[in-house]
Amino acid sequence: MTVNRRACLLFALMAAALLAVGFGQSWSLSLTILNLCLISAIMSLGLNMQWGYAGLFNVGVMGFAALGGVAAVLVSQPPVPAAWSAGAGDLGLTVLALIATIAVIVMVRRAMPKGPLRAAVTFVLAIAGYGFVRIFFDPATEAIEAVDPSKSGYLGGLGLPVIIAWPVGGLIAAGAAWMVGKIALGLRADYLAIATLGISEIVLAMLKHEDWLTRGVKNVAGLARPVPYEIELQTTEWFLALSQTLGVSPTEASSVFVKLCYALLFTAVLLAVLWLAEKALHSPWGRMMRAIRDNEISAEAMGKDVTRRHLQIFVLGAAVVGLAGAMLVTLDGQFTPGTYNPLRYTFLIWVMVIVGGSGNNWGAVLGGFLVWFVWVEAEPAGLWLMDMATAGMGADSPLRAHLIESAPHMRLFVMGLILLLVLRFSPRGLLPAQTRH
Image 1: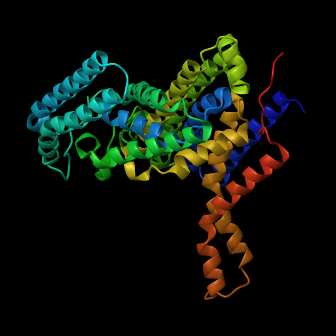
Image 2 (image 1 turned 45 degrees about the vertical axis):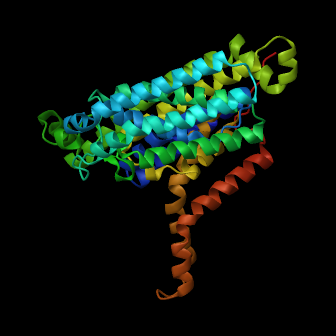
Image 3 (image 1 turned 135 degrees about the vertical axis):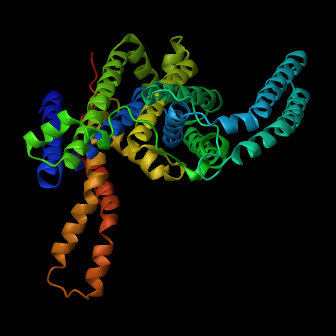
């Protein structure tokens, strides 16, 4: 079977699985899974650019997704005037102190010759500048966080439409990736993985503890939506007439309608990112990236700036992940730093790329759909399986109780089983990358 026919078959099976959930469970659940599959597919595309195009082993996907989520808060939330009044002055002085510290360090480094003395002086100036910045920063954050901490305690955002936060999330993640890349892309693959994982944990720790910016672990709830609210639809005449015509309750119809609106938005974004990724992959730039991935030494010998190209693709992939992170927070309606963990936001994304087919954009999308669908449905399926397997046992059987309580762990077992089967029978993924000659 050709790759194109296999792709059509596998995507048709995924569509059938989503329809089966709609008919067998509920259409609201089916659309919820679809929306999360769409976002996961975009994240998988971002990682596929880094690993599939260039062979960059990025284990810090979680950090870039979290930065995208921050953008949703900073763009869409209304500003808190009392917080700005309390700490804006000291925050402005903080920025000036930081700029002055950086300027002094740059001038000193330019004036001194390279060597241990310049490195020592730079270190001393950085420590002194840090203390100088904290003189203004600490009072500012304390004043901001003291402003009605149960409801606000942070600066808020710009009060703009939340959909603007999606490209902003990509830009913030891209900026962070540029700084990370400048430091870590010269490292060997295994050291790069350790560095990106550590940096993502640092990013997450900052988001959890900098209450003045994102409320930390107190979370930011009630984010604006790019789609209508259910309660508004349930009081609209045309929608009430539509739900009556369809023979469903306004509550159920409004839930499905809102999720369908999200699905249309997310599908448009996914198709746009996929189209751009395909254009880039099959362009001379994409062929150059694959040549660098396959043999860096030969590519460098041919005059290619390997480090610069690695930085380019690292930034582009992180931008796509940040875009998906902002979309996910928009769908959830809240920003919760405590929910970001490597299992959900790094390991699963890697499984999506590996299972789908590293280096193939359509494979990355398929992996995003398949892995997330299995991740969601494995738990209820496991519960049904355990219930059937223990049907002959007594209701008070400790073995029955233990097996039913263990059903949620089926998702980890099934995910590992899928990964092992794919690596055994299709090592290059379900939709392997095609080499064009």
